[in-house]
Length: 476
Image (cartoon, rainbow, N blue to C red; front, top):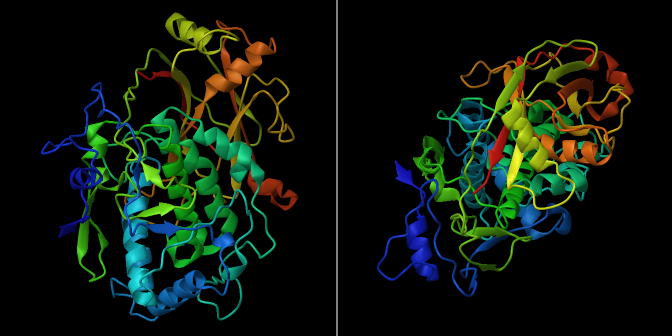
């Protein structure tokens, strides 16, 4: 089996970001990153650009090439590794969700699919577009029409269906891009590829939601059968690249050195091994998004900038319950150590610690109908399904991406979802509605996806968290 052809060390030497003759090793936890260079380096010539699909001419070369590539791949036998069905089966058989391998695995998946589709299209300049569902919350017009290879008849969304700003709006995306906690952003630490340990905000809110919003095959682990899948995930990948312009990835070697063995295939159909550290930079892989800068430095290469990210759990508290048709409210009573941390984190003035109060809603059962969203609040004594998301007690919303018909390992019904509770508690403290030392009342309530009144029966389904926890996560 082959590996990604470009390794980070050689790439750095090409850019002149490594010391002459020296090796650029990935720093371990607590070790300083590489020294920054004085001046940015231009993106290497030949770097391809992935563009917003809504900025492209529907009859232009990019969309035309994608249609030709998809059509050619659909015409190949199901067992052909370069065919449409076999490429989708890669996702069914290997995709990690609910852990920190989610982002690098899908970046590698898109990287190899793009090459296969490029070869199938006959256009060597082809790059995958991305669907910016924040700026354009309707499925792009180029993906509709009978006989169009980009159309998928199983979708439950229509041409005029509009994604909800509760999940994909600019305020939500800006909040996700402002997260400092790597796992809160990118999903939780795991030692196995299909192990569900905790879903971060990027995956649990816009990613999961868009799968369910489009519906049909996109709502299952066969989602790559819908051509919009690849543009959806290109946007998720773009947001990771955007986040990395100002935030460092974890330096945990269990993440960096993890290898996806034989998950993907190259243009010859041969299996490929990919290590996480091989896919940390889009430019290293030969592409960038049109929203990324045209110059790069160590920060853009995601090698970890001057400081490293380290998590320390100072204290933790748990409570377990099951909720059905009514809001669930569980009091958590942090110990003195955690209260002291919360007091510093929520201080109305002065310098705050570089830390997050991570709230985990754990072991959540997926409802029979995944068109259910779950909203999370803190200390709201009037909570109801009508409580708006701009209420100061609101923390966030999560949705479900789970295929109940997929019997494969890793596609389990339970999952955990992560939130930053510090921002909400800080807001409540400023308004005199919370004082450190008091219990933290965690509340969750199911609502119909998109607030569709025709789905009230969906919202009444039982969703059963096995517990809740608060953890103090500090950055050094």
